[in-house]
Image 1 (tube, rainbow, N blue to C red):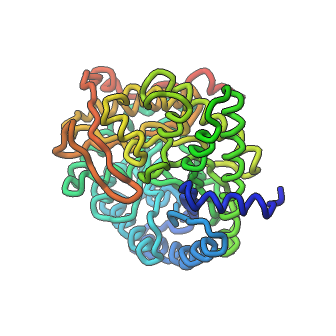
Image 2: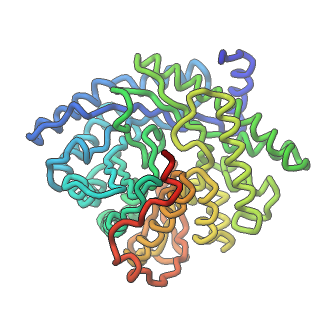
Image 3: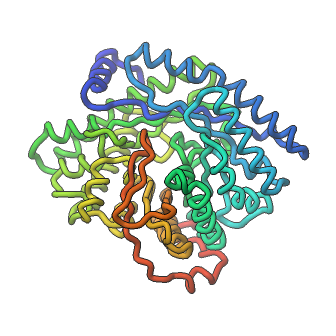
Length: 453
């Protein structure tokens, strides 16, 4: 579909007062040819390949920013899940790979590098388990590396052994990064039904079915949608849906244009545009504020889930009309720390962990950037992960948990990372034990909807 000059100009105007930006241009790089029995050879191959492909990624993205007048907030790289590349290695070797990834990221100047990942929805290889056990040390000794582990899928069910192990690794990561408000946990996601072309961190990785190298773009735009909803004022639900869809259509078109131009500059193929509305800590750039403008008194109250369902559905419908290259997760993100409206709702006591879980059944991902007391037991965290994964497998959608058991912190305090990661109030958790349930281990079988052949 050709781009009309007027529609691009209209979208550019949104950047002036409505916080519209492109959240990320993420270069996916395959590392499948970097395997070797010698860890020194592997780390050198990884460093060389990333720095070769991404050497001008920042420069090229900045050139497109200047050309179109639209800010690109983050420039990132994702790589093949490292557990696959280093399947013959142990914990120490995996940490060396993490350090090589970090060195490459620092050399090319990107914001984050993602793909320190394992896919264990049906079971572990020895390399998978070694990578997972290396995560706390890897994230505590690097600056830009992000990690994710997929523990379930609609086709495979939920690997409860992986859920239990990941809860322990989250606790250990929190401890090893305690002096920085347990920031390591902000770079670690546990997925169900992870997608292979996600441009957003911390969960991005370059899937094994992806090409050698590709450019994926993630848009933003909650502020633009908020302004459109406010401008509507009254109106029934059909009218509200039309306003949201028309707005998302425009920002999706602009997002794909920017992504394609950055890909051309880097002389690599364009992949997908992830149309997720991704909030920032900036005032007016909030999913929560959109829900309030739609008519709920505050996020967490009755009607919140219905409003979010409408918003998420409108985003998907508009994106599909605007682009033939929609991918990633594509919906509406509801992270607490990255959304001022969500933060305020938590501080007022209106938004609880239980209500957030209900909301994740209709949004694009899951429990994101949730800070909880540092003494929350590992089995409680495992239960939270299992609950989210259950929503994912039954509804055949991506769900995730990025939870921060902030070491030494309790309810009433907060963690503050600044920048995009923002500030998260410590949320209360019901520590009703589920240890007896989860210690059964094994795998929750795939649901009947997995039988699609």
